[in-house]
Image (tube, rainbow, N blue to C red):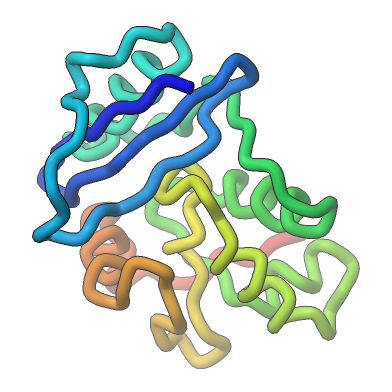
Length: 163
């Protein structure tokens, strides 16, 4: 397992990649001790993730095209895949994601899947909002969620209907 800590304007991220792809991207607390630096990334998969994260923080709107290995249940992987289909700057409600998966009553399960997301920003669960447009929860805090949405220009954007 290769690891790196990447510092961006959006926060410090600890990334981990194995042979099958990026498996962890965690937003670190502001006072967390520094680990490896991004320059220490030795695997091509991790280097690709570091490069994408730095570009994303600089405003690049391309989705990550590298290999991801988040684990999770079949339902979680379906939710995460749907979240990766949301364009940069778009938002969707938990209920919209559930309905798009053919499970219209599963908004809470979508929220639980988002909370279990091991790949912050790479799987953009920060793009999920409550039914009335509220921020809802976020594993790394609402202020970081608000900052990510603002970074993407989504602060005043409408929700994205999913078909």
